[in-house]
Length: 512
Ligand SMILES: Cc1cc2nc3c(=O)[nH]c(=O)nc-3n(C[C@H](O)[C@H](O)[C@H](O)COP(=O)(O)OP(=O)(O)OC[C@H]3O[C@@H](n4cnc5c(N)ncnc54)[C@H](O)[C@@H]3O)c2cc1C
Ligand code: FES
Image (tube, rainbow, N blue to C red):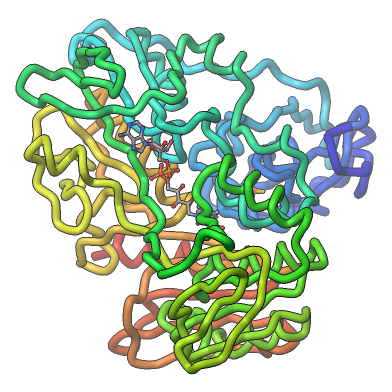
């Protein structure tokens, strides 16, 4: 039986009437103890694993689009035909089963062998670079390395990461891991065996100091030099640091790496009261996680409402109420002016004693390498629609990349996990010559207690916000409109609506 699922639904090995599955419908059942998803498209029926290979969401609650199924929780996409995870954040394929139709019944028979990509033709291989070096062992870097091997690329792949830990589930660092409900063993994206089996040369604590685009060479901080045929820059972003007077008696914590999260967990063990500086997504997720650890939590932020700039006033108020209901105290319209011993003095004159302070006031793209190498940058590394930078053979992906987004018509740089992974995947395919434009609709999620907000599209500004449902329930779809058309849609407890909005935003560009 697959991890979390009990065998629910009909026994598909015993068969079901064909007519019970309408065209376009999906049904979860089981066969031989495994949770199986049946999906019908016209006269065809597919049987694949019923649980997403990312966090095990039930795919029957997702959306079927053509011969793919999209996951309700974080929008991974799987081929129903092959089981392949065609879009992050899932990477592993779904298992598949043989279907047999007898008369008016459909039976799920034996499990099928995984499909593998046919080997690349020699003509295709001739265009491949001699080697690929990936700078950055985060979302984009990991996804790129995995995709290079999935495409059959058989030359050296080196993944250089300044982090001490292997590529990890970064979003979890402010959520379940910090709250103490996810084990540390769940945090690495893959085990060391994964890299070894695929001959991905993962080097940790390997900070790149310089890139020489002319000689196609990188130099590491320890002086090691490495040539490359193609390079992917995926250095992510660094937390904005505060230069606050005082500080030493109450060190300021920042959160980007697993080591940062561990340090906060350790500090929280002896702390009774925490200050979170900044009402950002990460700041508020930290607040929720520290509440789960029973700390008294105060959030200090200059805005009138948390998240208002990104999510609008209505969601901002709803999120504030949710946190207040869970015991968080907000000090809005305030900043921390200085730290004196274990007391933070606020700009309005009030004082807050605390034994732990976490700062979440945003990030800056880590573009220093690109700047020094002479790449075109503009508050991010500028790329074309294929994620190629201004230097031949160098691509960029993730939090550092500023790409021409065909949906908004703007050059975007976005700090979302799934966008970074999908950019890594697209960049990898383009490194191998695919010439595939990056046109995924941006998606992110954020979790506060048991409430998850899903957001598709991108609306830096809007003319109107429509709310369908009730944010207090919470059960709502919030549409951000520009010139009357949806530019982005946020949903709470409406996973299918989020997926449908994603498809609608995709189709708009497809028909342009
Ligand atoms: C705590 C936290 C929670 C988050 N939660 C969410 C969420 O819920 N939903 C969501 O959509 N997004 C979330 N994000 C944002 C998301 O994690 C990022 O958008 C994503 O990780 C960006 O991927 P990236 O590959 O560009 O950068 P990263 O994942 O940050 O990876 C960058 C890598 O580059 C390495 N590096 C940097 N400089 C060098 C150098 N000079 N040499 C070698 N290596 C270098 C770093 O060590 C790191 O390994 C969260 C981020 C954090 C920190
Ligand atoms: S559980 Fe399916 S994408 Fe996360």
